[in-house]
Length: 69
Image 1 (tube, rainbow, N blue to C red):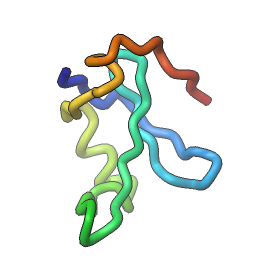
Image 2: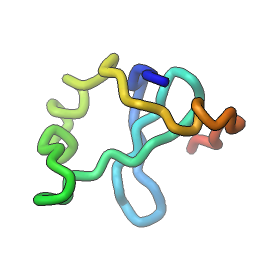
Image 3: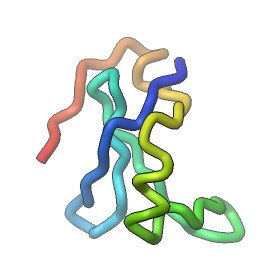
Image 4: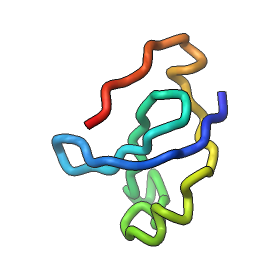
């Protein structure tokens, strides 16, 4: 299910995590050549993706909302 990004935080390993409108969190790593998300590495890039919809597998599975810092 598609859900918009509402914000971000870093996990305990300093990886960026998108906070989705549904209450779930999803890692948004830039790890070329496997994952190409150059927008993750800058504040302007992350801000430009607020509202962008990601596919939330946790919603598809009916998972409870995630904890957020």
